Length: 264
Image (cartoon, rainbow, N blue to C red):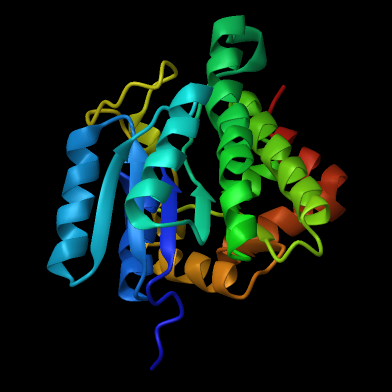
């Protein structure tokens, strides 16, 4: 079977773990040359080594998406080293947890700086190079972009914004040859629950998400790569994620009732 991304150059932010790592390996199996970026260089190199072990080519590029200059520099390094850019995946993100009345302005700024501004800057600096090759841009949103819930207000707000950015870019890029796919996963195996509100990774933190609804990261990555390959405008999964997203968009009253019926 033909590999859909043979010799295509793919850049993934937040590529050192979780969904980003799984995406890198999935693109590698499709023949892509994969550049992974993030703040933890040791994790990035592990992904590159794993890519090489499966016969793919990889490049580790340190990048902090909250630093515009760092994003610009990462893109330039990738293009200079690998020769261009065919796919950019704005995947870097984390979750600030807590009720709105408990969150500080600093908590909100950290959340929006990574999940919203980081996505926007990734798109900004990737698009000129994607235009040259009629490439693909992908933004990683969440079912939370359509289904907010108590305790995740900041995270949901950031993903609502990512959805808006994706819809805007799909229109702005129409006719340019560049597609924008915004992907909204349900529960996926990742390290998001092990990252605290300051963005620090702590492997001892408990992941309270429902394990029986969780998709393995490799399965999720295959579905996401397929959506990007098909240049879909928006793609929502898993099965439970689709139900939740539909309810959030079309039955908000029922969702509100369900979330509040046991609360005084």
